[in-house]
Image 1 (cartoon, rainbow, N blue to C red):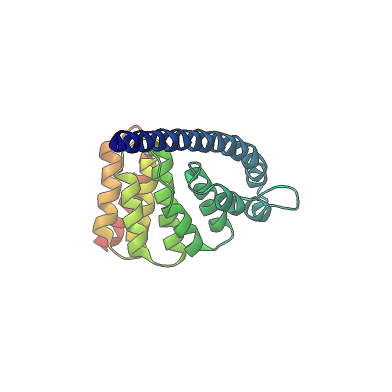
Image 2: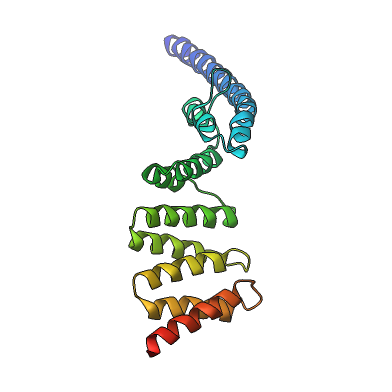
Length: 206
């Protein structure tokens, strides 16, 4: 009898805590939905500031509207913030704060191969500004080796080729231009690749 009573109390407690857990879970889901809606609203103004090239307001906000940095603080672990990291990284490039640009762009991850390649290319640009050409090349390579396309991949290859030229690694620069001529023959960048290749070869012959 005692065991039956103990079992009933234990079962009742289990059921009670189970329903409390479900209630808390539902409340958290409602909270997340509300947060996501608020996130979309809060993003409108800083994106507008960004498009108007008002980078300080886009980053820090003003007395009325939040900036991207405040949005990250308010919505971390609640919504997907990858696009915010991209915006902030681009802003820091414009503000010539390249170390911060690299930090935020490295936090950007996307299944959109065009955006992801662009983010890596921007990291490469930031390393160029820091005169860290080895890292710049590494990120340009990540860009042009990731799901190639004729519209943007040749741009990333040319960026790498120009760094190779600047570093007097002309054989690798020519290799880059050859890849554009071979793999992206219908690209508008083919003419530039051809001219640059001939220019390097003429220098090497002298």
